[in-house]
Image 1 (cartoon, rainbow, N blue to C red):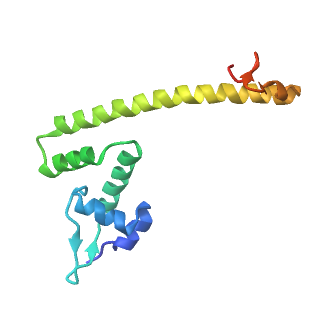
Image 2 (cartoon, rainbow, N blue to C red; image 1 turned 120 degrees about the vertical axis):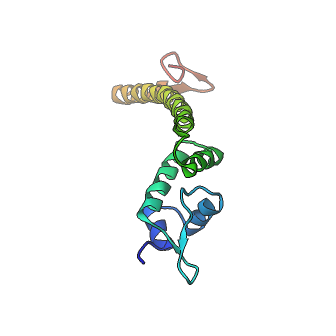
Length: 141
């Protein structure tokens, strides 16, 4: 019969057993999970690959409803590839915008790190903040 137990899939994906059951209940798996005669879930390598993709989707901020919609389109089979592409491109644009925002944040942080390194090296770190107002070279830089 072969296949992977829910515990093995949890270990391979980093999802908890509870999360795997949730994904199944929510219809987020491309194929129904096979069950042994005893009722135990048996996962395939394809299930693990699909779950890993869903994990990346979630990590990138894709809402569960969107993953569910994508899963539904895949389950329908051929003929809706343009819809799948549109969904993925929309999320891709969202992720790119997030990356741009994070890049701006990183630029500010990188600047602040350089200011602190410069002041610590020069022995002028105490000038970074004086009382209730930032100094000229300092925190507002």
